[in-house]
Image 1 (cartoon, rainbow, N blue to C red):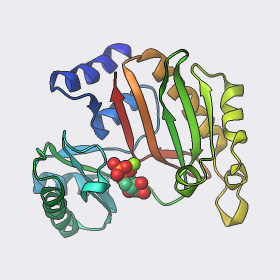
Image 2: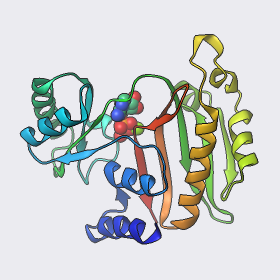
Image 3: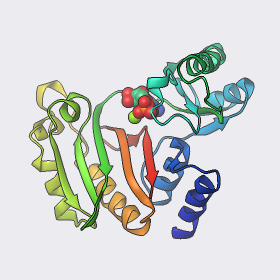
Length: 232
Ligand code: ADP
Ligand code: MG
């Protein structure tokens, strides 16, 4: 795993990047068994259509550019694309949006991926503490993290008990239990993701920051739809 992980990290560095593209971050996560979406970087419109057909609709398109870290800020994300023509239009629209918002952006390609059904959104992140090393952060997506700052933290590596506590400690925990008409979230899967994330962080000290935002959690299973990794 470590060898494969280093290949991904070294490639980014050889291109002068201090961050992994989403598809690279997802490839790294999947080495550790994390449940990421499928993905393919298309270089042409017809290639994107062929992959979309293979994955099955609906699909999502996203910009891949070394100058763009926050894709939706650059108009670089289109979700819920339902057919071949939607892919062609979406492909052009993303390039047009990005050109307007980030004129100097080099285009590496357009990322095609499955569209994960709507559900409860969680965020799992990591930053490095100067003394204790990698931390793990857990919270619910959207307003819960952005406005209420309702998150929990541990120093990695974490145990199963730590993972359970990370989940139960947040004030909005009841949402995961199915409060207010929300679907009940698969907490076993969240624990599994937290433990695998901890393993990845310990084995890859090159990861300075990790942001899996959002992760969609279902009654059974979960899907990581965006992953960002900043390198040391
Ligand atoms: P950003 O770089 O702006 O964070 P994201 O990849 O997180 O871009 O995409 C923006 C939003 O689009 C996400 O917060 C999520 O709501 C939605 N989204 C992105 N990818 C998917 C996907 N594969 N399935 C479902 N929704 C998605
Ligand atoms: Mg995101």
